[in-house]
Image (cartoon, rainbow over all chains, first blue to last red; front, top):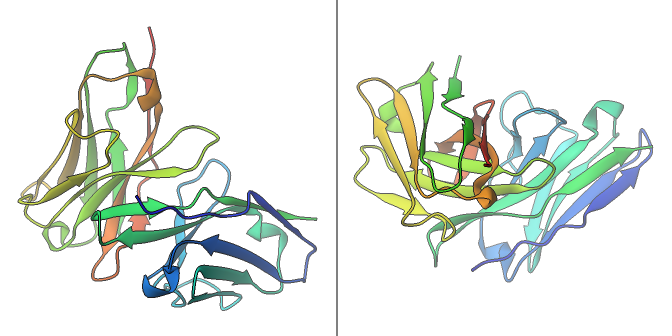
Length: 108
Length: 119
C-alpha cells in the first residue's frame, strides 16, 4: 500500500515561514491535499490538488508537489496556525485514500 | 451551510456491534461520494471507507474489510457505518467527510463521534 511520510514536528517563530513536507514514491504524479486540525476539532481542508485553496483559506497557505515530495508552506506564521497538519492522496492502484502520519506545528 | 452531524458512538464490548449515522444538510447529498475516517485519540487520521453516489460502489480499508459496512439513504440524507466484531483497536473518533468531486479530497467534515470498545 502507498505510504506518505511526514516529519513529526516543525517549530517556527511568529512571522516566519513553516514548510511541512510529505514524502511518497513519485508523489508528484498524484494530487496531494492538506488538512489542518486544531486541538479538539475536526480537520479542515487548507490545500487541495497540490496548490489550490478552498474559499476562506488565507493566501498564506500554499502548496507544491514534485518528484517524491509535496510541501505545504505557511507564510507569515501566526499563533493561530498552531495545529496538526496532514497530507493525503488517493492511491489509484488500491483505490484507497491515504493520509500521512501528521506534523505538529508549534509556534514559538 | 454544509453540515455533517455524526451520532451513534458510545461504549461497546469487544465482539459487539454499533451503527454510526451521519446526517447531512446544506447540499445535495446524492451528488457526492462520502467517506468515514477515524482517529485514535492522540494519533493520526486513518481512512476507513467510501461510498459512491447511490451506494452501488463501496471501498474499505483492509483493517475493517469484512467487519464494517458503509451505506447511505439518499432520501433521508444520511450516511451509515455498521461496525461488527469490534475490538479495542477500533476505539477511535469516527468522522464522516464529503468527497470533493474529481480530486479525492475531503472538503467538509463532521465533528466526529467517539467509539470506545472495552469490557
